[in-house]
Amino acid sequence: MDRSPGKAIALLSSGLDSAISMAWLNSQGTPFDCAITFDYGQRAKLQEIAHAKAICNHYGIRHEVLTLNWFSAFESKGLLSEKEPLTQPSLKHLKDPKLLLKSAAQVWVPNRNGVFLEVAASIAESRNINRLVVGFNAEEAVTFPDNSVNYLHAINKALALSTANQVRIESPTLKMNKNEIVVLGNSLVFPFHLLWSCYEGKEKMCGTCESCMRLKRALIQNGKSIDGLFINSVFQ
Ligand SMILES: [Zn+2]
Image 1 (cartoon, protein in one colour):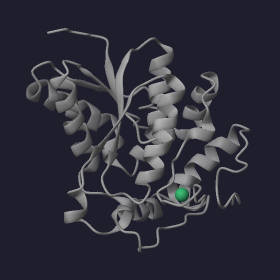
Image 2 (image 1 turned 90 degrees about the horizontal axis):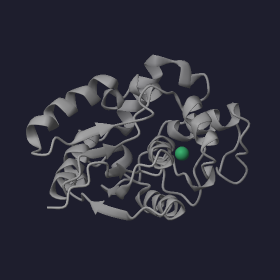
Image 3 (image 1 turned 60 degrees about the vertical axis):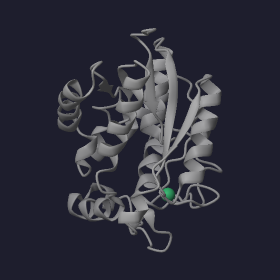
Image 4 (image 1 turned 90 degrees about the vertical axis):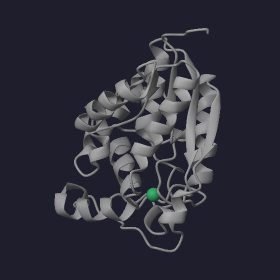
């Protein structure tokens, strides 16, 4: 079997963290077999797929969409529901751990990252690839434990036993906050207009959900223009 030790598969939602992680490793010469975007019935699935495809086109990386439509058979709230209004945090809210735990619970999809990583590891092993690239970040790890250093170490331990070729997950943005990730993106001349970080599935990013607010804050702090990116550009 052809073995390509350096080849990687990226998990690309088209959000800031996964996109910059892939872009960074691409700039370091990592060859990518493909980038995978999951359709798990989330509100923004069409937007995430379209934006991930555009990012892949930009970097000349093959894009694959994997459908996991059984998520919505078990869960019908939060990101998997079109009806439920999501929290619209203010800037102050983003600094309040108690409120953030509440809004994190609202968009939590049961074991989503765990499923994504295991499914992607299975695909990687079948192609004799042992590197998976994800976009974890320190900022959201505070309220999303499946974004944390501990989780990365734990799942790598498990994958060492459950994959024959020792698939490992790596995340260049693991210890960065959104601000630092934007700085890294700037240094890579990343096309920020191709991102989709919004929980909602509207014609533009809403600009008011927690994910939008985090992106908006990081872009503004780095002097990036947010013109035309969000439905609501107000920043307060
Ligand atoms: Zn949004």
